[in-house]
View: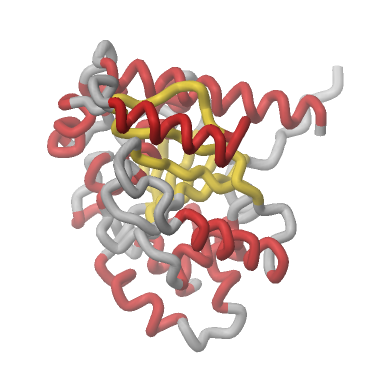
Length: 266
């Protein structure tokens, strides 16, 4: 019997230049949900705030050179990859040195490709998530050049679509100039409060704008989702029976089915 050929990992940049939209929360909980479902998952934290690293219980002393050393070419992917408390989920952590990345790497040769060259073809994961900083600077640009897909979390609140067109324009520029395979594959509605008419209206507007890219699962506002990072956990492990954990698990299932359909027809 022929040995099954290992597919290259699906590389997904989790991006929204607005802060407070559930971007990092989405990255760590989708990663954890897929990992609990026995996928091999890697999360690369290129946000200088390091919230994804903290949310997965990685304290500063463990982070080595993290994603900064990866971008600088000082360490290989294997050297900066850390185990987490979630089985099958590993992380390249953020470190404070990333704060000056735009200045430090801004004049580097092929500065847009630093992450791609360090990451693509180097991971044995099934799925790689890249948690980006809010904003469209060099770190986010590197993530978009390295990724195949953009996952866009949009909160169900006023001004939800404000600035999204700028992000889409940036992604298109990256596609044309650096990464022809890049596309916005997934939009996830977050922070949904079913008690308000506004949340329902925003969800309708986002579906009208993005069509079938929007996952059917909506992430509700949830106290447990907010609490989990302070315990160094994802909501998937902190309270698996909570509404937030169930929603992220369902969204991860949709994401996995989306990948299966793409590869079946690819």
